[in-house]
Length: 228
Image 1 (spheres, rainbow, N blue to C red):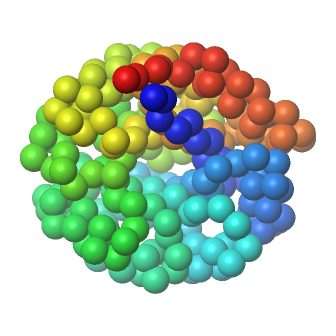
Image 2 (image 1 turned 120 degrees about the vertical axis):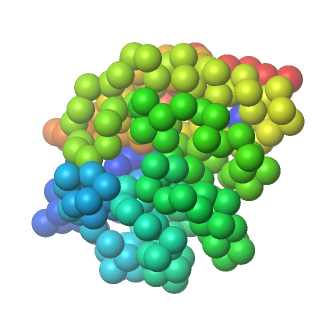
Image 3 (image 1 turned 180 degrees about the vertical axis):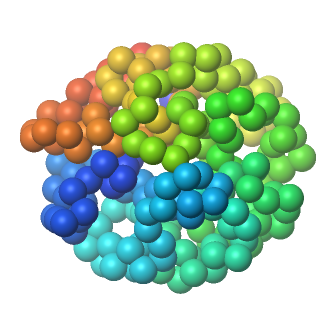
């Protein structure tokens, strides 16, 4: 049985002067989740949005809000994102010494919990928290800016992660990929075993978002890994 394949447009690439309209449009045209990139200017060089944006979007999004925290000491701010209406929260393993405690903080609130890994971060940092994960977010670019070029080496990283999860009895843990995702790279990651595809400029640039979402979905479904 194959796992779900979900498309999560990243609002980092949306028109912020019409953010509500942009979010409603991509959801109406087929997005499964809405990805919210949170940056603090410390863990990454850019600064974006916080819990107030999530709180504002929550009643109008009509899709789960997937909050990716690219911030130091994420455990300090997670309660605010939970209260704001986040449906899933990922934080970076590189940003806190307390991965297990932070996962528990999220899961105790009945929110999906994930750990994000930078392209060069090894998978073994997850070894002792596999039981506490709902998903893993693999960065396929270095975090901090939208519109970057996909890093090909991350395909084998996702494939290795999927094999590891399956072999250790954690096959229900989803893999999210973020950075440079379009129909071509999405297909590669789908074949490697990814489940959630974050796409920013590939969806929000130009018009006809429905066609762009459909293009990515068609590509990833055609190449999805089928597992028993």
